[in-house]
Amino acid sequence: MEGWATFRLIFGDATNMAEVPDGSIHFVLTSPPYFNAPFDYPDLFESYDAYLGTMRRVAREIHRVLADGRVACLIGDDVLVDGERYPVVADLTRIFVDLGFRYRDRIVWVKPEGYIRISRRSGVMLQHPYPLYYYPDNVQESVLIFQKGRFDYRKVPERLREASRVDLTNYQSEKWYLNVWHVTNVLPVPGRLEDGIAAFPEALAERLIRLFSYIGDTVLDPFLGSGTTMKVCRLLGRSCVGYEIDLELLPIIQQKVGFHRGLPLDDAQFDVVIRQDARHLRTSLAQQVKQKASVVRKKN
Image 1 (cartoon, rainbow, N blue to C red):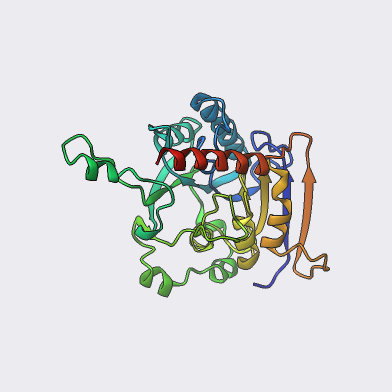
Image 2: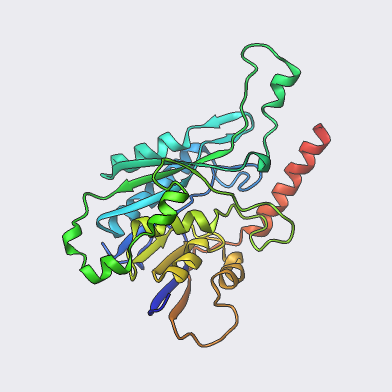
C-alpha cells in the first residue's frame, strides 16, 4: 500500500495517553490483557476490581482521543481463573457505555475446535455423566464494538471513500456480514515470534481495520503486545499509535512490523518513546506460567 504513514510506539501505561491529542484517533483496535489468565498473565492484577479500574481509566482515555463518530473494537472474553469465571465482556460493556460510548455490536470470533489451548473442562462430564457436571470448552472470543456518537459520512472525500472501498468478494465469501466469524487463532507452535504472548490473528485485525477505518487514518492500540495492529496498519496504509507497558517486547514489535533492520524508510516514520512507567514483564510472566504448568502436570 503506497503512501506515507507514521508509527509511534510508546512504552508506558495506557491509563495515561498524554502523547495523543484529543480527538486525533480514527479507530481503536486492541485486545486488553486477560484478567490474570493463568497461562498468559498470572497474578498480573491485584484483584478483579483493580483490573476493572485499569480498564475504566484506559476507556476514559480512549473516549478522549477518539474522534467523534469513530469506533473502538476490543477483542477478548470472560476469563476462568482458579475455577472462578469472571464476566469480563459484561463489565467492559458497562464501563464503555457508562463513559458515553454507543454499544454498536458484538462479533463472536470462533476458533478451530482442534486448537483449544488450555481447557479440560468438558472432561468433567466424562468422569461424572450426571446433571450439573457440565462445563463446556471455550472456542470463542468476543469482539466488542463501541462508537463515539455517530459518523457523518458526508465529510469523507469521494476519492478517499473509493480508495478505501471494502472488497465485497471477501465480504461475501468469508461471511463478514455475519456476527459470527470463523478465523484461525495464532497457533501455539514452538519458536513462533509471539511465543508467550496472547496475540490475535492478522486476518482478524485486517477485517476490522478495513471495516472501520479509511486509508490514511490513525489507528490506536492501547495494549499493543507483539505489534499485530501496527503491522496490519502498515500493510493497509494506515498510521498507528501503540502503547505497550512491557519494554521487553520492543525487539519483537520491531521485527514484526518490519522496523528492525536499521534501514532507511521510504514509506513510513517510526518513533519509539520509553517513559518512566514502562516495565519489564515478559520474563517474569513466562517464569510464572512455567511454574503453574508444572503444578498442573504434577496434579495430573
